[in-house]
Length: 135
Image 1 (cartoon, rainbow, N blue to C red):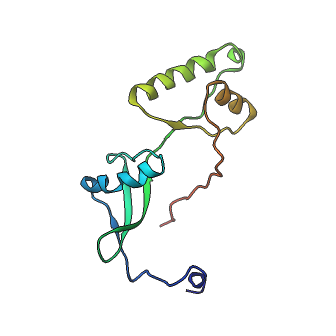
Image 2 (image 1 turned 45 degrees about the vertical axis):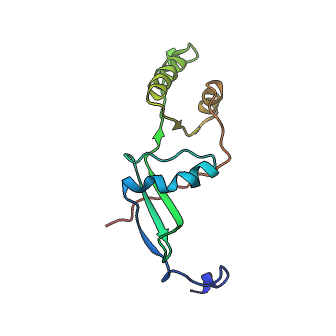
């Protein structure tokens, strides 16, 4: 509990944490609108909420499926001939038809250049990976 002293009073016993039912997702719309963020899909997410004694949401954490596009590979003899662009265009068509965003990790300068050439937005985030705890 020493680490919590700096954060103020420990309130873990004053809130209830539970998974939000899918039919309750509308309760979070104001939070997302106020932060100009997209509401997670009820079909592909789970949301843990913390509620106070009045049932008001005082915190939430979203676990959601997010599309991730990679790797991309082109045979050496076909590189720099537009094959990567054709592949990217095909994936973009699918994503656009579904109204879906996706992320790509630029593990090389070439992939970074492809992302930039295809109007992908560079984000100022550090990426962290959590692996499942071994059983």
